[in-house]
Length: 129
Image (cartoon, rainbow, N blue to C red; front, side, top):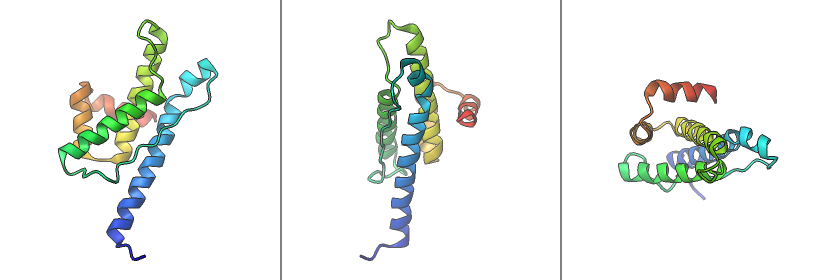
């Protein structure tokens, strides 16, 4: 099978990011898992089918990442305040790390706009991971 270098690079990058996102999400749930005794969860997010130069593709990826982060971080019933705070931190950390890994300015801008996060806060969370 003859694959062009650009296609092979795109496929490798998508696979690498998928693995990185799963690992980041898994690490993001450490605090919660240690409290609950659960094993680490992970979720694979693929985006090789998306055009990340187009805002529609970026929005789809954002939605996939957000959904995966919320699933992995196990958002509890909102009445459980302590667990909710931990889960929200987990989601923030997982999202920032995944977005940093993807390294797409449109995706970063979308995250900042949707969450109201400052660039400084984003950089701080990214360095922690």
